[in-house]
Length: 306
Image (cartoon, rainbow, N blue to C red; front, top):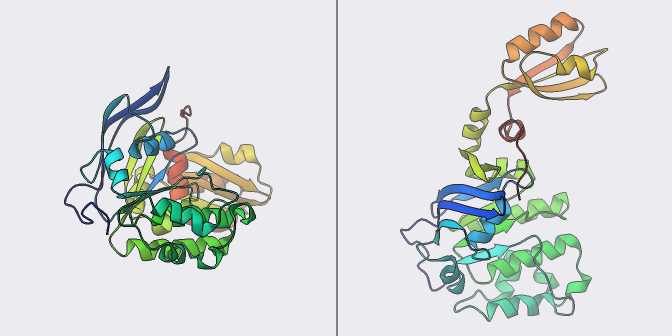
């Protein structure tokens, strides 16, 4: 393992009173967050919610204006130097003229006790790409290389920024299988994603940011419950968007031809009004609100911040 104790008793991540302002823009505005060793945490929020700035401060890439960051009880720079953090950043540059094996080997050479390069490539599912140059990689393959580079220090905390962007469905599934094997060893993962189904399926915990602050923190079920309400779906002949928008207690809606899907604070009241206006409505389904509905509800009507 690396130079820091793999199962140290300290929190894997501790953010206390974290703030970062850019002029009048409050990118991160008082974030408190503790992540225990072994947790898999999804960091969600609309564009400009402060996710990337928070991750940058966690990695020591940006200095906070106020507050403190520790990773396994250490400053971010010390944790990075000891190989305790591996980061897979969406915009992480790769070397066009270097092979995949050479890029992973270069990063491995910076750490005291790295994984063998071949093992890091195998875990990332790209053992067959060791001799391929960076300028010959597809978008999805580049993401896998970034994953291998993040793994090669054998970190206890892995930070992922939009890890499956540019991957097709099969590659995404393979990626998460690799991630599950990694987290089964008790490692800690923090990942930011726009694919809410990934958070719903793979995260132990969801942290939802809006306008630089945390507005929800808990299991997927707990975050859903915070939003309240239910989703109503139906086939409604003759329906129009204004009619759906005017139904009582509706917070979000979609109309596709004769099919509607609405999120409602009181599905009974919404359904009664729908049937009064459209008595021929049929194929009616009512279900608990999903993570996407909770996301939309909890992040609505806020000005985006970077």
